[in-house]
Length: 417
Length: 83
Picture 1: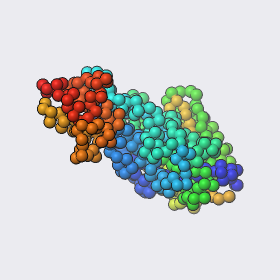
Picture 2: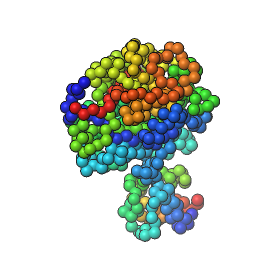
Picture 3: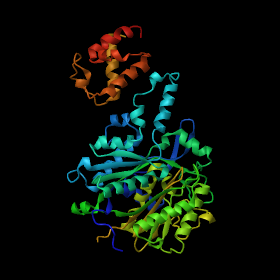
Picture 4: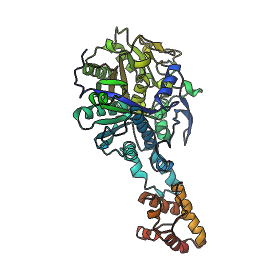
């Protein structure tokens, strides 16, 4: 179908910078996903002990000095790395774009929890004398901290802010970038999501109290969405930043184009603090499809949000089963099985992991699926080994979060009008 | 602590903040911030570290006395004489 937007309104992804458990660039990330390799290890966390977790190893001082990393936050450090990597990948050196017309939109599930816990612990070492509370606390914990650290590092003087949307935040930041480009507010958008939450005992403890923290003697098998033996979420850190541009500008500078964001949807369950709600998720997928001008059967790959909780996985599977009934050429995978739940980074990392399918026409598998839950037995579920297809044209990326926030982003193979 | 020991402590604290700090050409009587890559937050880091190490409360109105290496030593010498 002919794209309904002019080239000035068509938004394309031209650069990817990421760090995920087990990989610090898209090439390695894709290789791990296709190989069915888990990036999960363990963390020994204050008060919590040892638990499965997704930890990132990347060149922390490639774009910023150790001193600046010490002053800033882990989220800022991840963000600066990902943003710089994305710009390098996109070939953007700000000769063709103005830093004042560049926006930085970063999705966060939460921010400041790690820093606050650390500071409460620190002041506890001094009999809770608040004179020992650090002056770095406020600049580290303001919600725009990770996005702001990116702008300071890169000299970007356009707008920057955080998009708080629980675990739908990565997708939500991408959507924000698309909207700001279409409105003409900025000419280049750095959009993505970041998570540093493996540093917070409270996040682990809260999931455990909720009965939703994954445990397994082999950490690489702890994240197992759709499996009968799943027992919760594996918490991961990570980040992914995309460069988004208007198609006309991208074409004019001869940019590499990963794909075009053609559809998106966001809505709210308006029901429960933590429990997801399939019918609203279905509506969200339908909104995104409608905006893209697509039918469900047009979707080649659906990246499921499923986190490995009993109820959450079933809710989403019900929504997918109803929306994609009879869609024989729609393939479903789950990226959290390999990298855990990267929270604010989850949506964008999972999308990034799928983007190379426009080139290699492979669908990476859901791993650790040893004993499929019949309630999650979706037709088209790609389990344990990758699926080679003749051609991948459309990726639909689900990302849902607490307080009932749903987001869907659709990316299509780029085809010139 | 001797004046020399106090000076070493100050330089050690600054080196912890900025491992690239170069003290070779440092003029002890000129403001530290003009010579080293230090800003107001770094300066507060120095104050916090002195507080943590020596349980020392430095009132804000006395911060200017920490401007140069020599003035730091002058200011801290009586406070650290028994350390």
